[in-house]
Structures are given as C-alpha cells and as structure tokens.
Length: 83
Image (cartoon, rainbow, N blue to C red; front, top):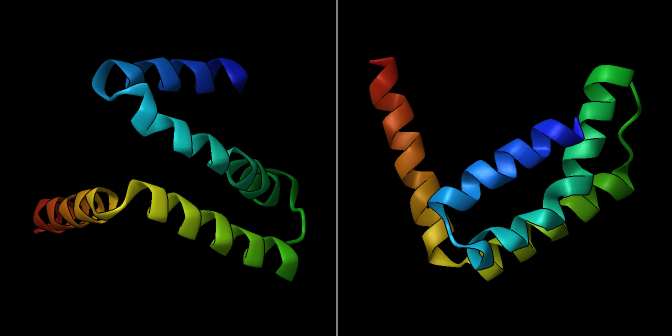
C-alpha cells in the first residue's frame, strides 16, 4: 500500500508543485479509515465524520477557489463523458 502511495505521490509531483500537494497529506488518515471500513468492515463513528468534515473544510480553505474550480471542471468532464 505504501509503495502505491509513493508512486501516486511522485506521479502527482511531476504535474503539480509540492506546495500545492502538501495540504493533501492531511487526507491520509481519512483514506486510511475509508480503506478500513471497506476492507476490514470497521465501524464509522460520529467523531470521525465530524473530524473529516473539519479536515476537508481546512483543505478547501487552504486550496481556496482553485480547488473548487478544479472539482467543478472534473464534474463537468465526467458528465460529458457519460453522455
């Protein structure tokens, strides 16, 4: 799992600046918990969901409008691909 994470990380570094990607390291525990729920049938607790919301708000605050704009572009591209 770590090997795959590093491959993805270095692939992203070829496309984006490290300063833009660094904030996503805060998402690591969220991905870990999501994989635990999916692969190990762990229970989600309210504390985790509230904490996840705070982390995502922080990431969006740091990334600013550019993240919102990129997400909007990806959603539009996905919709067009489905048509």
